Amino acid sequence: MLARITYILLNKQLRETQPASSNLSLYFAGHEHLINADRTQVLDLFFSSYDETVKKHRQLEEKVRELSETQEYLYEARKEAEQAKDARGLFLANVTHDLRSPLSAIIGLAELLSETRLQPEQKEYLTVIKNAGEILLSKINNILDFSKIDAGMLELEPVAFDLYEQVNIIAGIFTKEISDKKLQFELNISPQIPQFMVGDEAKLSQIFINLLSNAVKYTFKGGVTFNISCADCTNDKTARLRFEVIDTGIGISKDEQQTLFQPFVQGRQPAVRAGGTGLGLSIVKQLVARMGGTVALTSEPGIGSAFAFEIEFPLSSRKAVKDAKLQKENCVVQTTHGSLLPENENSALIKDIKKILIVEDSEIYQRIEREMLEAWGYKFELAENGQEACQIFRERGDEFSMILMDCQMPVMDGYQAATEIRKIEKSRNAEKSIPIIALTGGSEKTDLKMCLNVGMSDNIEKPLKKKQLEECLAKWL
Image (cartoon, rainbow, N blue to C red; front, side):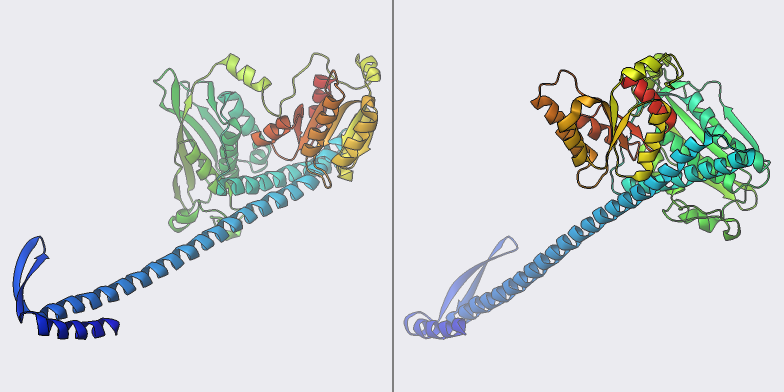
C-alpha cells in the first residue's frame, strides 16, 4: 500500500516537472540494453520489480524458517535417538551384569561342590549344572558384546598368541557334543601356517566358537570340518590366513541367507531350531569386519553349509607369546610353590599372613570366597560395601594383608573404595600399599584399566575359580 501511494505521488510530480519520456539502461544476462520509455512505464517497471522482490523475499524467509524448524526437529530427534541408544546400552549392560552375578555364583558353588565327596550320579548331575551355567553365561556374554558393538564401544586388543594352541583348545570344547551326536570332526591346518602371530586372540576365539557351535548344533549326520589355510604366506612379516567351517547339516535356504547375519535372526528350519539369541553370526560378521575381513557363506538345504573368511596377521615369535601370557590383564603369575592348601610346605607362611578383607555385597559370593579361604587356612573379615570397607581400613588397616574387592556394590562401589583406601595410605605415609584385588564381572581390557587407574593391584574375572584365587594369593602374598 505504501509503495503504491509513493508511486502515485512520484508519478504526479514527474509528470509536472520532467519530459514525457527518457532513455533507460538495463543490464540483463551480461549485456546492456537501452530502452526508450516514458516515465509511467519506468515507474511501473520499478514498482512491479520491487513488489516481486518483496514477494520472493518473503517466500525465502518462510523457507528459511521452515528449514530452521526442520533442522531443530532433526537435532532433537537425533538427540532423543542417541539418548535411547545410550539407555538401551545401559539397560543391556545392567541386565547382563545382573544375570552374570547369579550365574557366576552357580558356577563357583558347583566348582566347590565338585571337590566334596559325592556319589557318581551326583557328580554327573553337578557336571550338567556347571556346563549348563557355562553355556548360559556365554549367551549372556554374546548379548553384552553385541551391545558394545552396536554402541561402537568395541575395541580390538592385539596380543602375541599361539594359533595352534588356540585352535586345539577350541576344538576340544566341542569334543563331547560331537561324540554324543556320533559326528566326525576334522581339523586341517596347512603346514605353511605360521604358529605365532599378533591379533585379538579372545575375539578370534569368539568367532571360531560361534561358527563351530552353529555347525555342530545343526548337523545330525556326517560331520564338521575346520580348515585353516594360507591365502598369502609369502611375506616374512605378515600372513593372510583363510578360515573355513564346513558342515554336512541341514543347510540354509537362499531366502534365509539374506537375513542370516542380521541381529536377533535365527535361520534354519524351525523344527530343528536349538535355541539361542540369534546374535552369534551377527557378532561374527562385525568382528571379522573389524579385523579387515568379510564372511562368505555358501549353503544348500539338505547338503550343508560353509562359512569362510580371510584375515591378515602380523607374525610373532615364541618368546613374544610367552611374554604376552605373563602380561594378560587377568593373568596371575604361576609360582613354584604349588598349592596353597594348609597341608603343604606353605603352611607356615599362611600362619604369618594377616587377615584378608572380603568386600562383597552378594551373600552367595561372600560364601564362595569364605569357603575357599577357610579351606586354605586363611583368616578373613567381611564388608558388605565400599564405605564399610573404608571405615574398617581406616580404623584397623594394619590387621589385613590383602583386600578382595567387588567392583559393583551399593552405597560405594569398589572403584571409589580403592581410591579412598589409597588416600588413607598416603595420608599415613604408608611404606607399602596393601594389595587390592578387584573382582570384575567381565574380561574386557577396560575393566583392568579402570582398576589400575584407581590404584588396584590386579583383577580376577567372575565367575571366581579356585585355581585363579589360589594363584593370585601366591602372587601377592
